[in-house]
Length: 127
Image (cartoon, one colour):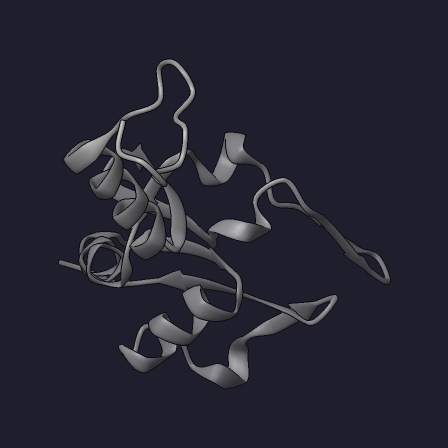
């Protein structure tokens, strides 16, 4: 080990692999899961830091669970591709909803907020 370099715990990746994992975590800002129902493809996506949180406002209660929103990570480009492919989407979080709105999938006037966290649902008609 080089003098002055940080100690590494056993089993921790080093070198290029560690850099790639750190970079992947840096750019993976969304979590998602895909569900197939007959001819529909549902995308559940959320800003990754919201996973595990529970939100409530009035009679509305939302649990942003890993079980529903998934464990797969995506960056903006990957989320854009997923939005293009899906027919239905359930979106949670400022970045997730903002990207969908910028791409024309969501009308900001139809976004609801629960504890100031944006939530949108999308249904696309396809032939």
